[in-house]
Every structure is written in structure tokens, then in C-alpha cells.
Image (cartoon, rainbow, N blue to C red; front, top):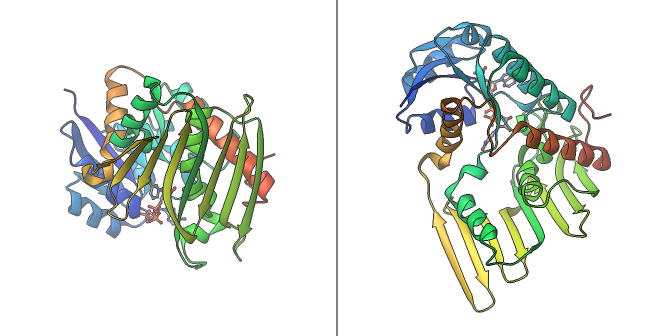
Length: 328
Ligand SMILES: NC(=O)c1ccc[n+]([C@@H]2O[C@H](COP(=O)([O-])OP(=O)(O)OC[C@H]3O[C@@H](n4cnc5c(N)ncnc54)[C@H](OP(=O)(O)O)[C@@H]3O)[C@@H](O)[C@H]2O)c1
């Protein structure tokens, strides 16, 4: 089995979780980490055992020993940092949302193609054991036709203009940070919507504290998505089918629950992947590279572009704006 040399760009919250997950994989070399702050890079490298650490992202991507770069900067920097890594010959897995608008995601996909390198958005749910089980049940036909979906991702994060999530310059707001998940689920199973109705509650910094979206599809099916930093609605996606329901949810135990409901029967299966399962998306990158693929068949770039186009449409309807980075 070929082992790959990984580099991490940015040393924030999710970078720590991802690095921990990488340590669970046998075919990973923890190669280098880059931070805007050399001290932070050194501390991160020591914590996880990276070979090298750099006080700039430019030095990280110039390291000839690094083959794959994980981009973990705030949303508004994903475009810049992904192009930087690709133009320096690195394969890339970039945190979600891939960027702030669909044309920006298209630019990233075009650059990966031009450079002949791998690129994937770090949408981790489709690789989780609970999601794979749900997909198996839905595809088996046992539930009958999928008629309706509803998804929510919400937790309490009191307003603080200092937080990334409330900072418009960093692409803050609930839609792009967490609303992307239920919308991703809906698009994966229902395709691209024909009609979108959306509204948002904006915070004093102008980013959305909460957003609600109603989708109608060409075949007449409906779906809803809700995201918020102001309620305890939790994390779940519900699939309503002709013969039963499936509910994927994050429990208070942080476990991934899959509730399977038939008219006279129900079951709650709990999956607890180590390191919250972030290693599965990393394994996907390496599996694809082993096969010579430049994108993942599970999360292809065409899906990231469709997702970004849908988020653009929601933003326009709900009045969610980022200075200079608004969809046309
Ligand atoms: N997949 C998931 O489950 C998941 C979960 C959380 C977040 N995310 C995504 O990951 C990305 C980062 O989120 P996070 O929660 O890890 O954020 P965070 O804790 O604020 O970390 C972001 C890191 O980006 C770097 N950075 C570069 N330019 C920056 C700037 N101008 N301001 C602030 N930081 C800057 C910093 O690293 P250095 O100081 O080392 O340069 C910082 O530590 C977001 O796009 C988010 O959507 C994904």
C-alpha cells in the first residue's frame, strides 16, 4: 500500500480534529504543517508528529515532500489557498464550503483540471458508516420511493462579532457553516431544485444567524432545510418514504444515530467512529489517487458546483451578502 505525505494548511479547530483522524490511517505520513504563525505551526507539528512546520502557507506548499494539502482556513480563503496549493503541484482536499460562490468553485475545479491534480471538497458525511447504511437501505427499495426530506443543523452560539462564524470577512453565517449539511443531503438524494424559497434572520454583522429554505423539485417533491446559531434544534436529516422513514442524527452522546422506522417497527442504530470519522474522507482522497482519479466519485466536483449554485440561490433569496463576493 502506497503511503502519502500530507500537509495541513491552517492550525485551527477542525485542523486539529483532521490531524488526529489522519493518525489513525496506516498509509499516511504526517509531512508538514503551515500556519501564519511559526509558533503555532511548531506546536501543532509537535502535538501530532509532523516532520516539518512552516510559518507561512507559501513555504508549506513549496515543500517538495508534501503530496496532499488539507485546506482548513476560513471559507473566504478557500479559493486563494486552494489555488496556491494546486499551482504548487499539490493534490487538495478543501474544507466546506468549497468557496463563497459557484463561479469561484468552478475556478478551483478548472485549476485542478489544468494542473492534472486531485481536488475534493471535505464533505465528510457521505463517508460515515451511518450514511452508508442509510444509502444501502434507501437504494434497496425496502422503503419505497423517497417522497420528502427535511434537515436541520442548529446549536446555540451567542452573538460575538469576534467569532469566525459571525465575521462576514471570513464567510461567517449559519447557512455556509452548517446549513450546507442538510442542503447537501437534500441535493444528494433529490437532485437540483426547480424552486427555492428562502429567508434569513441576519445578525448585527450582516451574516445569517438563522436561515430556512423550502425546495421544490421538478417531479413535485418538497424538502426543507434549517440552520441556526440561535436554537437547540440539533443535527438531523429525515427521509420520508412511501413505506417508512429514516432519520440520520447526531445524538447528545455525539454518536451518529440512524433511526429506521417502519409502520410497526423501529430501530435506533448508533455508530461511533473513532476521531468522529474524519479519517474516511482522507482515505477517500488516497483511494482515488491510488486509482489515478482526479476527483472523488462520491463527492465529485460537479456536485460541489451544484451545491455552491444552490447556496448562491439561497443567499440571493434570503439577502445574505459578503462584500465583493456575492452571486450575480
Ligand atoms: N468538516 C467539519 O466538520 C468542519 C468543522 C468545523 C469547521 N469546518 C470548516 O473548516 C474551516 C475552518 O474552520 P475552523 O472552525 O477550524 O476555524 P478556526 O478554528 O478559526 O481556524 C481557521 C484557521 O485558518 C487559518 N486562517 C487563515 N487566515 C485566517 C484569517 N484571516 N482569520 C482567521 N484564521 C485564518 C488560521 O490558521 P493559522 O493561524 O494557523 O494560519 C486559523 O486557525 C471553515 O471553512 C469551516 O467551514 C469544517
